Length: 143
Image 1 (cartoon, rainbow, N blue to C red):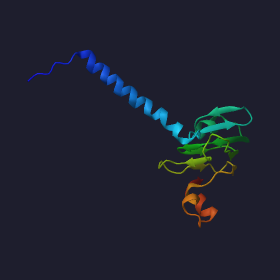
Image 2: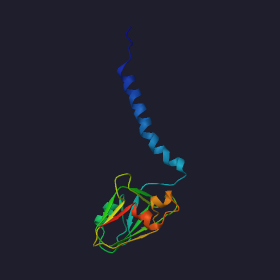
Image 3: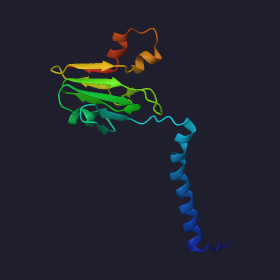
Image 4: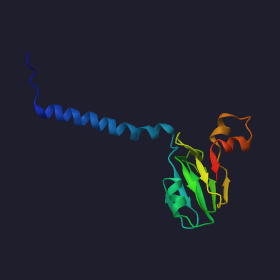
């Protein structure tokens, strides 16, 4: 038995399914009541925005302050003196650096002095009794 389907019907059905799959991820943030979890890094001095901490660090001059908003996933090597400060404005999730299973969240070169303000450690979040030093040691590498 042979079933006849005009080519246009299969193509239209395929495009409709593809469109539904592409649209679904865009609809998910609305369910989060207007809170974005994406990463936004702002260089305070230049008022320049970045979507990951490594790019912001690379472009920053020594002594710069970088504001972290949302959840930033990935690893970053800090090679210059910086201040990294978490901000939690309306519409963003709490500022968080997450290594995403890729290794240390931050690797700080021995010549760099880095000040980290108002950024929770993922280890401390899961282990409230852990000391700050123990929590930081699990996510930050200084060399």
